[in-house]
Length: 280
Image (cartoon, rainbow, N blue to C red; front, side, top):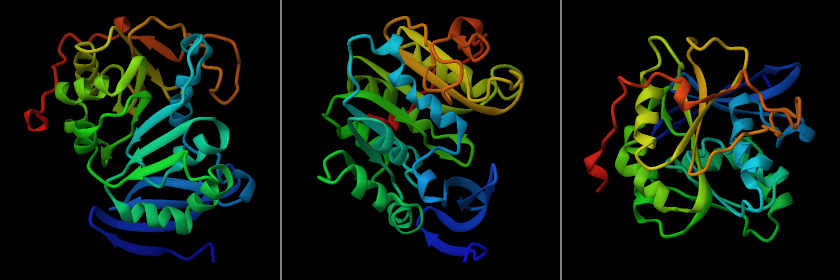
């Protein structure tokens, strides 16, 4: 059973589901057009745990130094994939999560092969914590009237930025969709310095037009700044000294000097403000 490969056509690419191992655990992996999109543990007790280190940093919205007297009640995730983080969120946190995913086929696959339905039935019995909208992320934020405490962006075409969700026009819409003092977190693939750093420079320069403070985290603290990797960018309107209490529960209550880089430590002088006039 676990050696079989499943092939599925979708409007947004050819999907392959295969099997492998991660840290000695069996996993089910989903690829789109040959690139890995997501995965899940197969063992029941691990099905709602995260495989990907960068997703732990989405939990920066729960950092005690950011929260203070706030609560995270309503979260928006743009880019559901096979709903890896939403499953984790439902199982480990209180509050509600809305997900925007353009490819409805992935939702059906997630229910059948990636345990989404089981997670919803267990942690959202009243069907009021999790909602999914099958549309383009840009269209959703353009029409959205709801206010969120946190907005997460995890949308890619391969490893490339989706410009329409990182443009100045899009960031303005995202900021308008946040409650006062809300937090925006986005996943960028690139490097902090060197030849793969242009993406992060452009994103920072654009975000600074709308938010007062920008922070950048490497998903893996040991990675060199020049290495192409997952970078988690946090945009807020107040200075925060993150404790990163949720990061693998390692060194709780400690500020990770090696992991966090304030935007002032990044030379983004040759960055450019991203624009997408089609959003208006």
